[in-house]
Length: 227
Image (cartoon, rainbow, N blue to C red):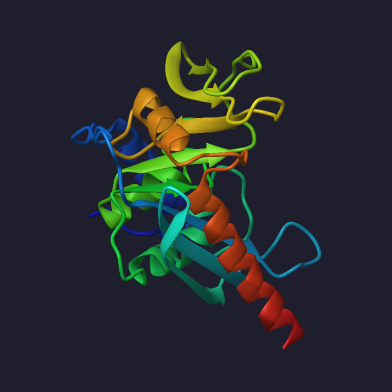
């Protein structure tokens, strides 16, 4: 099982190793009933962020628009903010939140990239490897992959390419809204990732479980900073 490295060197080595692995592929069932998500935010600080900043992670499991379970946790950031190395700062707290869920999700949506990464192992992929869960990344924009936006109707997609490989898709959730970047991650290819996101999205731009996890994390932060 993958773990969370403590140094930049250890993490880059681990990312190279994870990026080269080909785990057993997971395909979404016809009616996925437990789609989970995790989201993390931090206290407002000066600068990009340092080790020890207070972090607040939320995790949720939904079925359609129904919340089946939701939790939030808090703790210190494991490292400073470093692009492409978010696992140092965020990984352990995200893991703690997901493991605190009383219901195990079938698949986990993470607010991070997966194969769209210089070493093909973004945080969404690393979280899945540590937890032993299929994961899908969802972000507002790609990290290093490139691709044009899809046409403006629900479920329209356009590939995100990195070195000629499809590592994700732009996905238009509701028409009229900006598309989200959907990333192949742990045990999921790009098409499976799109299927999960569309199954978890209704009227909002963001998948329902990720919206719930985000609310849980931000609510815990607000309570901590005002209490």
